[in-house]
Length: 105
Image (tube, rainbow, N blue to C red; front, side, top):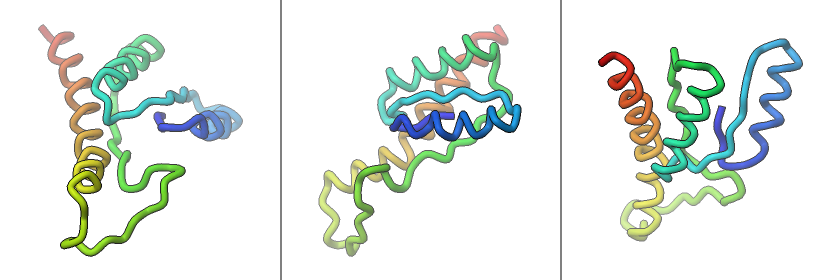
C-alpha cells in the first residue's frame, strides 16, 4: 500500500491486526524515481507482484478539492490533475511491466 502521507501506516496496522500481511510506503507516485524505488522495495519485501490496483488520484490529502468550471481551470491545475490521475497509473504500471519484461527474458 502506498500513500503520500504517513497515514498509510495506520491502515497497514489495521490489516496486520487482522493477521493480514501488509507493508506501507510513503511515496509520490507522480515522481518516476520515487515510483521506481517503491517497486524495488515491494519486490525486495515480497519477491513478486501478483496484482496491481491503480487507485491513486483524484484529491491530494491535505489539499482542498477544487470545483472549477472547465473554462476557468488554470494550466497548472490541469497539469497537476492529469499527473495525479494519469501519470501515477502510468508510472507504477510501467515500472511493474518493466520488471516482468526483465524477469521473463
